[in-house]
Length: 52
Image (cartoon, rainbow, N blue to C red; front, top):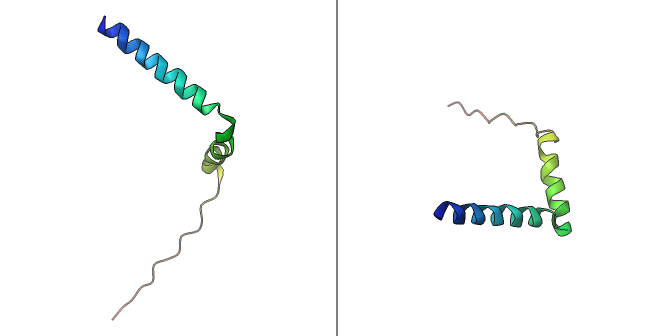
């Protein structure tokens, strides 16, 4: 009985998340997140060395 309830709750959460991600208003944000791994990293600046 409990496992059936857990299964139904997880299924509802999964379908709800799927519906939320297909929302057209989120498309620009999701597209930007999808491009993040492909963007070049900004070059790191060397730390300033201070010697006494």
